[in-house]
Amino acid sequence: EDKVVQSPLSLVVHEGDTVTLNCSYEVTNFRSLLWYKQEKKAPTFLFMLTSSGIEKKSGRLSSILDKKELFSILNITATQTGDSAVYLCAVDWSNQGGKLIFGQGTELSVKP
Amino acid sequence: EAQVTQNPRYLITVTGKKLTVTCSQNMNHEYMSWYRQDPGLGLRQIYYSMNVEVTDKGDVPEGYKVSRKEKRNFPLILESPSPNQTSLYFCASSQDTDYGYTFGSGTRLTVV
Image (cartoon, each protein chain N blue to C red):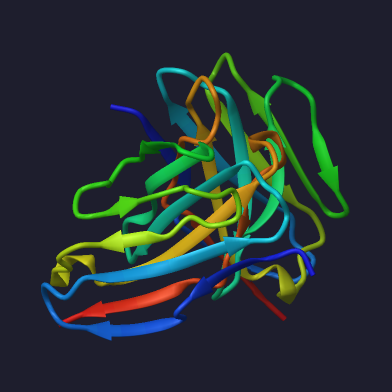
C-alpha cells in the first residue's frame, strides 16, 4: 500500500529552537516530494524535491530528500511563534504528475 | 491577483440532494485537483486533472464526480451526498506539478 508517514505528529518548542520534521514514504512510482505549511486555512507551498542530496532552502527553512532511504526532512532554525502550523508532506507518485498522497501532518507549536 | 476560487465557502445540505462545489483558477494552470481534509486522516485526494477533458481518480473518488470542460474550471459534483461526505474540501491548481499546487480557501460541507 502506498503511504506517506510523518513524525512526530506534534511538537512543542520554544522560540529560538531548531526543529526537524520527518517524512518517510513508500510509493510505487515516485515523482517528487512536496512540503506545505497549513495555518488554520489553505496549505501554502514550501518546497518541491526530486533529487537526492540537494538541499532546498528558503530563509530559516530547509529540506532535503534521500531517495535511497525513502525519506525527507524539513528543518526550521531559530523558530518563531509565526512558525506554528501544521506541516504537510506529500508525494507525487504518478507518471504524468498530479496524483498526490499526503502524510498526516506534524503540528508544530512554538511558545514565546 | 492570481488565485484559486472555490464557492461556496460554507454549505449545509441534506442527504441525497445533489450539489456542486465550483472551483476556478485564473493562472492558466494545467493541473487541478480536489481534496478532502478530515481530522486524523489528513488531506486525501479525490480527483485530479492533467488538462481539459483529462481526469483521473485519486484515493477517495467514491461518491464524487468531476468535469474539466475548460481549463479554468474544475467543479466537484456530489450526486447524492451522504453524512460521511461532511468534510473540508480544497481545490488546488498547478502550472506544473514541479512547482507545487496553489490551494483555494476551502469549502466546509455539512451533510445532515
